[in-house]
Image (cartoon, rainbow, N blue to C red):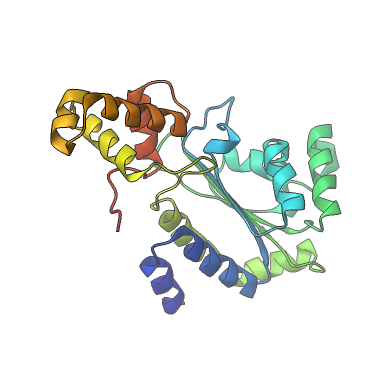
Length: 247
């Protein structure tokens, strides 16, 4: 247990953290994992798909429709995670047809066709009001929900601990989500804007012309899909793309 926690804490790459986490979950019988995180949640909207950090080790044939055709929005466990914190057995929510809407039943059928039939969902505690984060642990093919619940009874506390450490580590990493990462120069000029500097000030500091500074700010706004530079500074900060160690 200690060695795995040390590995999670000392790893500084999202991909490597994800590999460590999925390998550990597979040891408990959850060989497929879906993780989602957004800082743009509202009661009516979870944010554009491009602004959601979405990790999955399922095949694209499942992951792409689940994400970009909106199945995740209608999934009963995702709805549960939007308003709860902690872990929940899929049997407690998705296996009661009388409480499911036609849209939720459609999602379950889509999942069943991909052998996504048993598992647990963890909704993580978030610090900001517009943050939401959740993880679905999908049991290996052949395991029933009753067997999964027995696994959780024996190892649920360990799984939850490892999952929470993974969550806090991965959201501390720089993320560009579905869009291009900011360049070094774009990050630099946004950081100076965040310090209250004008384009003329920044040009003097970094040795560029004001027009070139404005160009980098425009490209940064485009990369972040925002309209104003103020929004760009906020979004880049939320994505840990500025004010971070670049090494």
